[in-house]
Length: 472
Ligand code: 6PG
Image (tube, rainbow, N blue to C red; front, side, top):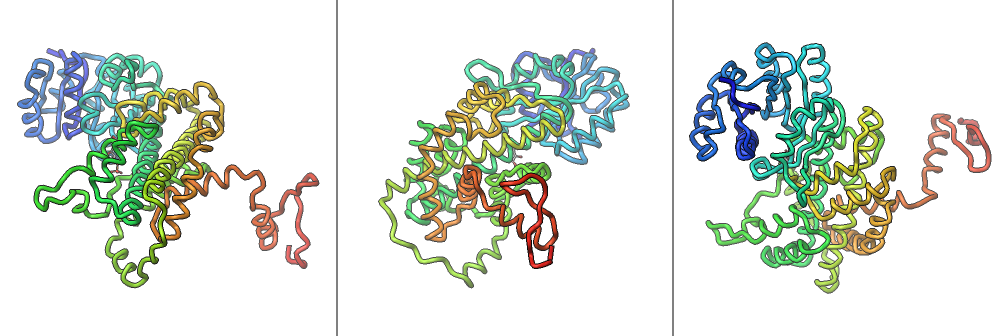
């Protein structure tokens, strides 16, 4: 008998936890995994929730176990496996069934899948889910793209399983087709920037102030009670305080300094570049991960080029205070850039992305959840059409308070050869953005000189050319 109200395909860490979360919220869920052994293992571990879980050995059984119209969540590796799964499901499903891709899809693939499923009678949803393993189990942030009518049909279950911020569900419909996956991509781009800036601050503490991990942990803990209060600062404090059982040293000291990446950060940068919207802090963070992976080359370069001699340093407490300010100012840049990219995409793809809602559903459940996002939600509610977060009264005020701290840290890091590419890019971004008279007049002159591209004059209308000795 078809008693399940929803199905989940893919019982990896995220899919399994999402399925348990659904059952925990009173819904009957059918589950299926390509390797049947995993399905059995999942069913055996479902414990008290077993009554609300139907574990299926075949895709046919899985479809038959769900009451039509069937919502089916696919949580498999992004890319080709999603297409294969949709192809396998399509002949088994009936009109009005909803396929929900909950993986970290490239939104361009999501757009293609919408087109491919058009006319099939099936409904498609591209859904960004953030929060990692714990989020999936206890309440993630959920970003939905597709037809609003399709969202309405799954809204009860998705809001039930989502994280709550002061009782408000962190799940929302954000726009048609690829909107949900695009917003999730930018969430991850911002996540990259947040993480990189925290790592840069850690680097200054470790390599400039010679602080050990437990001392740094105490600083991060203190920060997590103030305006920097966020999940990423919390876990940083925790990570820094954990000892390695084998060596008795802080575990962070034993971990290789090369970070992986699965693509969402890079996609954020690619899309921002395609739309001509600068996202320099995100870009610097993605590049820093790539540089981190060039470990052998870095070791060789250090041998050959050496490190700059350390300069006299200021009082440690002053530097630590400035690091906190630098992180806040850097965050303003990363979020201002991420939201500006979303605003441009909203125009380009006709999504009408609700910026305040996006900030609201990021306040809990997701990896970048923070107090800061509540302030962003308020800023966008009060200034819905502002072109840049930095122009809102709250964030221009925050920048005024933190700007000098960022400036001093970037200067000090530069003088001591400490890499702070994301923080430096944030500073460069603001210093360029805030200057009414920039330097592109010279670039225009150069372009006109070598390519007769023409320029505008401050004192006359129309296109002009320079008197470049007959070359233009
Ligand atoms: C989240 C995370 C999640 C995952 C990323 C990590 O929001 O829950 O962002 O999506 O951890 O895929 O991405 P990288 O492997 O590229 O760091």
